[in-house]
Image (cartoon, rainbow, N blue to C red; front, side):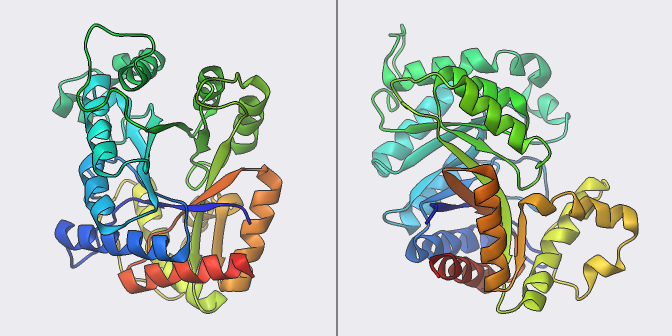
Length: 327
């Protein structure tokens, strides 16, 4: 069976707050570990009322203490927002706390609206131009190759698995050139998935970290006991996505029966665009769609994202999905 992992945005629900979101994420990670998922990643997003994963390294420490064996990591750290040295220290600390369990996925996007640059006192557009050099510097701070005049403590010598992330062709090209595993954010940007994976595999150059290309593709997966229940659970995420795309982001709302059918065609198209990497429904439907996606992409791993209003239902969705995939 293809390895499955989990991507969590630490959603904040309507009628709830950040503290409850953190508690729910810890429970979600424990459920993923118990169900047999390989990795639990947290994404860095900023200035979004419904997403509480901005301080990704801190959230991962929380998740690490709530679990025992599952790999924990970033999906991803938006490196232009930081300095390589800071991230080396943060993830070196995580490796010291949870040795042999830490993934460091790196992305180039800011993870927020342009105003974030003002808050960070950075020209993020300019800084992003140096992303490849910053990735190489960060690797050197962790591995010691090539030697740098300053040592990150913690950081140097940490047993961290680097990943390159992307939702366009740039990340695929850089991952191939640096010989890193590659994860594509097809759960919200499926348009360039096939081309990006083809470029990555074609241009891959072996490295000390990786001899053969290794890619992971993201899906939006929500499972219920039936197709109808799955669609109902998914309506919370669908509402959030439509609101985000129409300029009205907010906290994760409760599910709404018949939500998709109630939308105008323009809003239905927003959700329909995600369908190539979306599996929503009962166990049999979810299994069929995941298998079809895995076969089409040839991915080595899949990482599953899915925001559900009820934390217990979200954990149950994980278990239903894994049980369905195991047949």
